[in-house]
Amino acid sequence: MYKQKLRDYFDAHMEEILKDLSEIIAIPSVATETTDVKPFGEYSKKALEWGRNKLDELGMATKNIDDYAVHGDYFSEGEPVLAVLSHLDVVPAGDGWHSDPFKLDIRDDTLYGRGTIDDKGPSVAVIWAVKAIRELDIPVNKNFRVIFGGNEENGCLDMEYYEKKVGFPEMLFTPDGSFPVLNCEKGLVHLTFSADIDDASVKSIKAGLALNAIPDRLEAEINGESILINGRSSHGSRPENGENAVTKFLEEYDGGFQKLKALGKLFPHGEYDGKSCGLGFEDKVSGRMSCALTMLNTENGKLCGGIDIRFPIDRTYAEISGIISAALENAGFTIDSCEGMEPHYVDEDSDFIKTLLRVYEDVKGEKGTCIAEGGITYVHNTKGGVAFGAEFPWENNNMHGADEHITMETFRYNLEMYANAIIELTK
Image (cartoon, rainbow, N blue to C red):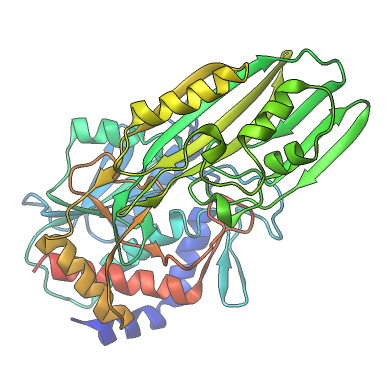
């Protein structure tokens, strides 16, 4: 491997690398389908244009796939044997930041900004991994592709379109999960529900920006009193890393609106696995499930809520969605929408995964093993795709929350991991 040569290159070019990261973070690329700029809005399109320009600068053969995604091939001819897939859209900024979320802030050897860990920081690392390979004239014998998408956070409609129009190579990894290699992803249920507000004392409740983020703030007006509950945000798949402002509010609520009390019983504050809803499953491969009440708002005389569930690979979407729907309906709520994904699992006994683990071990200097997580990565609905980084399992980078960040140490590991992985997989 070219470990030291690459490390020296990245150290010498870090100022330029961070300049690129600053540029893409400055684009507030929250994707939306309710826009005149199709398919995902002005800023998703602008981010993809930025990504294509960077791939053009690398001398790659690029293409825009109808503003759903862009890609670049290392060689202008020959089918790629490998694709590295990342996304340039982000979740909304939200509140509670100590710096501008769309301006790169470097303090205490840490990079802060929306997208630094998910997925703009890793995307910049991929760009510079390719740049290092090209400028250091490291031999690449097989073609590979870099793909940037613009709708990962809103359901991966970009990749549904991309797969139909273009398709993926046999080897595919994304820097949209965790190291060493994430080959097991739990299933997903996203559900919304509602009920009529039959208590005049409840004037308003507002909490939650996205189904896949633990809410860090709840504002309410009840009995003429203004209520503010502060919590701590985290990714919806890791509710234990946050403090849910909604369930904290329900725990403290002592009014007469029975629907709020019913929700408090179904979602006790500090319970993360949905046991009180009849869930709480786990298996040996993917571990314990998670279940979080992530949104609660009053709208047009109704109390509206949203739930994020990540379930083990030995269960099905039909089973889990049926249990949570029945629990809510028995408590007097109406199910407004319910969608999700089955679990994703790739057998670790392949040359592809073994190569990624070998790269991890060489760069990190420690044993690499396959892991399972609740997060839905960009390759969840692809055949044989795995996540390779961008964070380590022991880190809490406030993904989807305020003060999202990546340490300089982890960012450097991203650069080295992706460069070495591309080289090893294209020998």
